[in-house]
Image 1 (tube, one colour):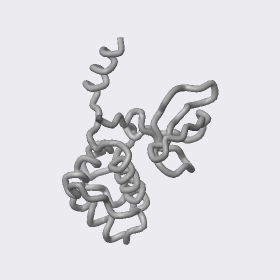
Image 2: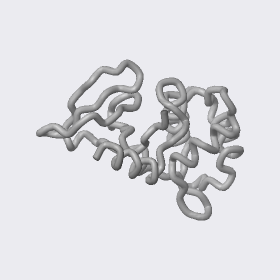
Image 3: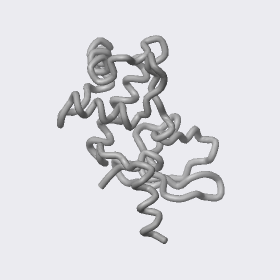
Length: 143
């Protein structure tokens, strides 16, 4: 099953990724990818969908889904280096996967977050991502 990055969330101050379940009066009900525990987060909790995140390159910005796909091409079925890996190891990975990344705006701290997300998606979801066409088809099926 494909992962919908428009419903996959990163929440400021929280470890891991979450799936959007529903809207609540005060924010959003989410479910952790790793342990499936549900929680309610306020609208001002710093909730960001992975679909909305892009990585700076010399030519512009690249969507996170494309970055994950390129990482998967480089890594195959192996995990990405840990976020605790040496800075040089992370830079080497991104030099292969996204050779034109903008080193002045895409920092090692960003790389650490991206490899954490990549490994979590690899372990608990899928590295195949829904497209707008997939979402439209799913909406038609539900109607």
